Image (cartoon, rainbow, N blue to C red; front, side, top):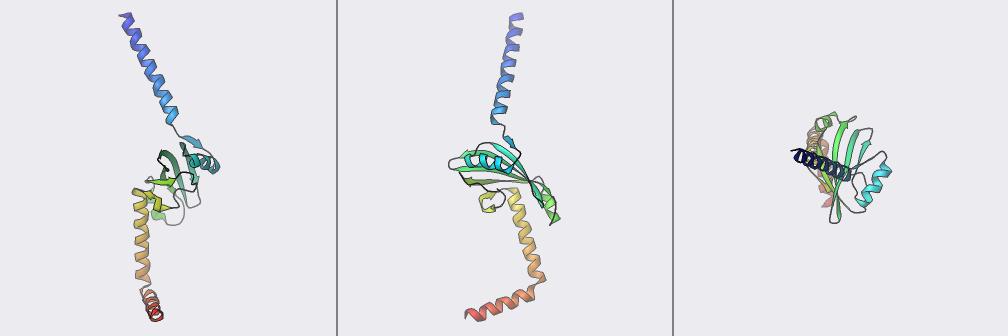
Length: 152
C-alpha cells in the first residue's frame, strides 16, 4: 500500500514538473519595448507586447510560424481618443499573417489580417463612409459630374 502511494505521488510530481516545463517553454516572452517585439517578430519567436498609442492600446502576441509566415494575434485593449464607438470593440481580436522578416505594427495593414476585429473596423468604416455620402451628396454629385465632363 505504501509503495502504491509513493508511486502515485511520484507520478503526480513528475506530471506537475512536465506541466511547468511546457508552460514556460510555450509562454510568450513579455516585451517591455517595441524594439524587443521587433527582434522577436523578425524571427517569429513567441513574444507579446502592449502598444500604448494615444488613440488606443493594442496587444500583439506572436503566436506561431506557419511556413514563411508569422501569425500575430492583435487585440484592441482600450479605445482612448477619437471615435469612441471603438470602445464597443474592446477585447476583440484578429489574426494577422506577416511574411517572415517583416517588422511592422501588426494592426496597421489590415489586408494581412482576418477575424472579428477586422470585420468590426471595416463595418465602422463603411458606416462612416455612408454617413459622409448622405451628408455631402450634393458635393459628391457635383464632383462626379465634373469628372464625367473632363473624361469625355
